[in-house]
Image (cartoon, rainbow, N blue to C red; front, side, top):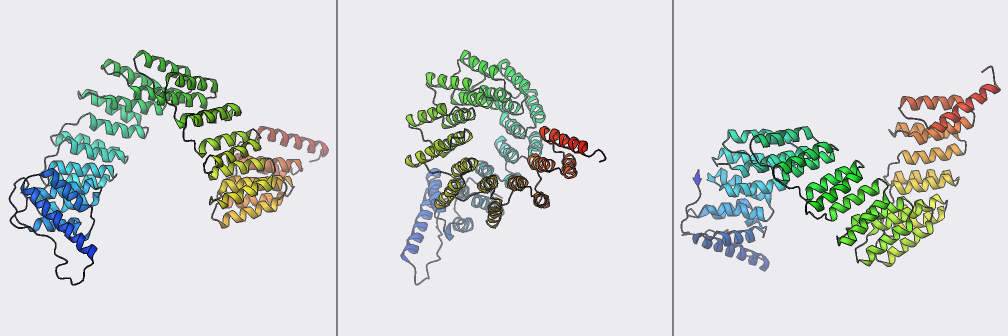
Length: 562
């Protein structure tokens, strides 16, 4: 193979001549061709002068034209035709394609070089490998890596690390580990990055035992873990709720003279909050201050979210006030968490206060926070306030989503205001939003509650025509409606249809059927369904069990010969 590096003057410059004998050419085509010729001549001149950077820039301009003359084969032919052309140009072509995010064309140039006996520079190959990794093509990375080896290119740690990273990103941890152990055999020593990417892959898949073993091996080999190494492992342990192991790694950091940083503490705080250990999470915040490390927006957001999820809204609001006092910027996500927590506790005035605070700060409030508030009002039975918020969205230029309409439709159906719910459905369609399964289920449930079961069945048919599959909620609402009307045979038929369609009945469906059978004195049917539930490992509601056996005892008392 010809090794690149020699530079000769270009005695002849070959350019594509596909238009030479064409009698009729459009002016734009002729201009395009003239531009291609000009750039190619410019590249040859720059190569003569060994001006690699401007030559690279010129070739990038050429490949971005994306014409039939700038494909890998066409450019290879163009630059190969002049026998004395500097072979370094092919490296520049490959790099230009990578910079233009044309990875397939860059790989094609690599193979053209190989097939013509031209060995690329290691730096060019590594540049291509990195692009292939970013494109998430582990098999292609391995192919190029193998070809580099077969061409006699001396691979370095970067080459190995890129392929290890490619395997790790796609969850092929076994392949990554195998290549890690082959590095030494091939005369290349792994570094911290080699281990970090595989440890990260194991952590993401919650394979903490393998991650821990690799980390220990890293220390045994005398490699010095960096913040990424420690933080990756700590975060992995925290996400798996192995908090004791996470804190042990933090202690190892201190012993190795490496101070935990914001990422370290945020991972630990998140782990503690997930497990409900809120007091310890707050203690870590104090420790951060002692370590002269200022908690950031992420630290407080994690804590506020943790307190909110565990029902401690007072603690969340205290943290919110603390952020304001310390001048820490509060994100939209953090505000949304606070609004949601307040709504769940029915503190609607305070929740609206948070929204007003966001608006006062000039923050971009979207439909998400309004949907949370509307749902809060609906759950509190205050449909009018929810509707008021919907109108405010319009005046503030915020477009409602399908969730907005579904929330309001749910509110009206709960109040048995079906006409108003249907008006919202019409408006939803008018603005180009498509009703989903939730929309139909809500309306079907509303119709069954007002005793208009046939309109519920009409909606069932409509949703199926529109390609929406009914689910357990759909059937449950209709079965409940039939049970209320005492139409048990039809309800049982619908139950059978559910099962035939591989939709598993839930406890609510069985509760409604069994409860109504018992109330009507159909004890054999009620006990048959109870047995079916047990077979399907579904636990019957305790109140229904008590009612069922109470009804049975009453019937036995009336008929002692039964």
